[in-house]
Length: 154
Image (cartoon, rainbow, N blue to C red; front, side, top):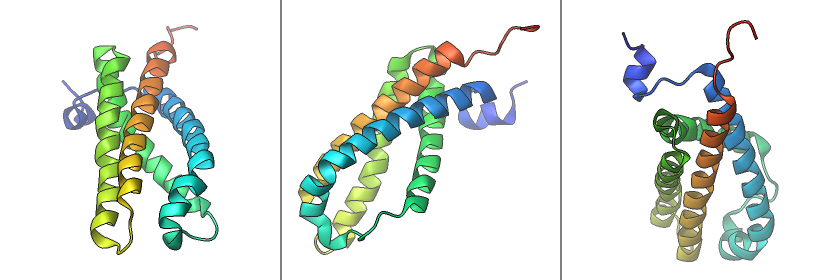
């Protein structure tokens, strides 16, 4: 009999696999996003939408975003990759998840804000797609290597 979680998600992810995938995806995403924002915050974002940006970075909403987003990456991209034992599946599904998530944010801003630059939308969509693909592949690879349950007695 399949568990309720398996029926809802279409996959059965062990707690160990989830934790390993979440941590690896999170490390990859945080490292790449930190590098991206360090290089591009002033060059792209501040130049194009600086009038909308806060003076100081607020860590709490950023932490909440990563917590929720990484859960989505693991459930919707990494888990199907683990089911098929192929990190490429996780990478493709991560790319699609990233594109949809970043499009939701950027295109909503495009539609509702008076001065949201199209350049930001296009670059951000490409970035979100690539970032999430890499994070999902990293999470899947790590979970395939280190997420297996330990043998009894070890």
